[in-house]
Length: 362
Ligand SMILES: [Zn+2]
Image 1 (cartoon, rainbow, N blue to C red):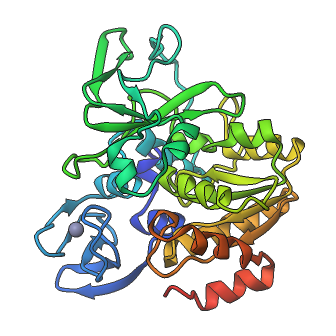
Image 2: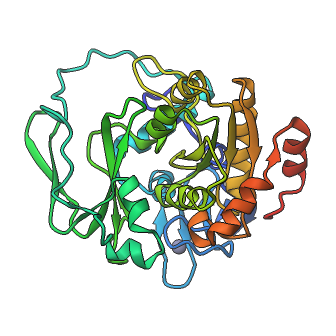
């Protein structure tokens, strides 16, 4: 294969397939197009997004959205990031699956993003009163404190660009969500908008590793030696799952971790941490069962089956939990989350095939 970036070696179809995005192929006056169920920008899900099969150019026709996409901006919206490095890394990951390898280049000296320890944007801890935005969404102050959540009223992330220049990225008006590696080291964070107006909803610090390399709350799983981890997608899902678990005092040795999306980074990459490494480390610390509890929708379930297929190969007992259609763990009562965990189905090849043939959320 040719081309010197993973992006140039990924077709729109490769991307949709790899990400488990629901689509169908159509052809009309504009030529062959993929018709995609859900718009990654506006969230409209009535099949009004089109992407050229060959060009990757397209549009969303949901209401006033009218977003124009190319494959890169579509990927950015889908991954909910504006970090070009993270987007490029995703395309590299997909292209590598197809046999593409990056050319070895002599790289110029790049200044590290940080000169010392990672410093979060200036912010205040949730404390006993909690953060109003999160209180309103039903997250207790205890959960907010357990996850070290902070409110950034007026603050920024300070870092150096590749040439060593001082830069800042503003996180004002966002809940700061610290992310630690398994050793408990603060490695990155997310900033969740509380105004409902900021784009993107989640902001990431520039130049730090993608969250997709870490397991959210994994450090706690390790310290406490959980035998059973319930894996949600995003941070709020993990808070909700943990709150549900805490709500039943009879449950022991179980807790919530997060995958930061519908994919696990399971392929070893020299010098870079992966979620697989983290999971194997947790296994050594006693983790046996992983219940995947992703959103109640088709793509998430398809992704869960793919992840389960891989995880059983690494010796985990994997279960797949089902949430009500269209809901994530933070959108239902704790009782519903506990039921979904209780009634999760053990993953087997047969279950995988059954779901592939007839996705209950289709
Ligand atoms: Zn749209």
